[in-house]
Image: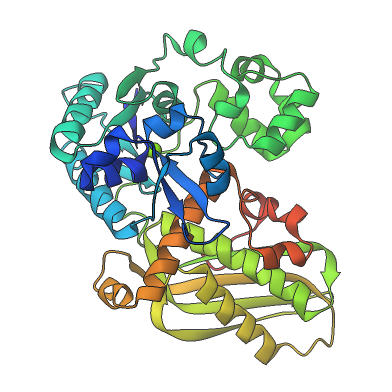
Length: 406
Ligand SMILES: [Mg+2]
């Protein structure tokens, strides 16, 4: 049986800011995107702000109503990247099988380590505290899904073990939404069949789930029964990815520039989020168009600098579209991908951090992307996407979008 850890840095952005300015530890504080702008939102908060009722993803003015003396700090993406790398260096002393999940979370396969999972988890927490001034919640289990669940169960600074012996008592009573990949839409479908806890799902017939959820029903049943076998991807294993892309078929054919534009922006945002999650940027943007007679073509352009910015990817995709599509036929599907990839750590970063505006946008998009990852892709959307009228279909990009040319 495998031993998998899922390690999660608590209140990551806020905790890092407290390391740089320890006086913030004693005041309620929140890291907020765009603190100047009226619509700035809370990206992370410390314990004191949390106790005052401040919530992630709410507007600054809402947070201030509950917590008038809230200290608002702008995000410093490069600081978070730095701490993210330092904690990974500590992980690497225990295993080379490390799979990052965003900047603050990672799975570790420590099956081959003689110390055992729980002891490693406790040592990691101690070292994070002493060496970085941060706290960790660690889940220890025999698969990735339960390990992730474990790290969510007790915070901050805690180890939770979910074993083959105790998972029925510990996991099954939890609401099904606590499972990785179970979003609000899935939750509603399950609730309609009176399936509310993970145990409900585990005990029901797989066919019931397949009827309710299609293919992903089988997956969910396996997860609930502790049968997730997905491996922890080793660092670097994600590198051979040649491109990151996504495509979307709209419920009705697109007939105008604004419609196509809205879809391209949504796709670009999704691609940018995935690039960032993989720690990648790319230099080539590729557009794929398929018309209502199913004839398709692709075209691409090179960028001056590599990017993981949704705004830059979107602009290129829209430009390509305007140059190459003449609206002879309505469009059924569009796709955007980014290739010529390089790691976020490479030297290119220097030139990016040389441009203040780009840095600001990168930090903002990074934090917005993080929120979409946590709260679903509909949590935050650009006004231009909503105007295009595709808000309702956006949620399905991640789930149904076929990745092309990946
Ligand atoms: Mg975290």
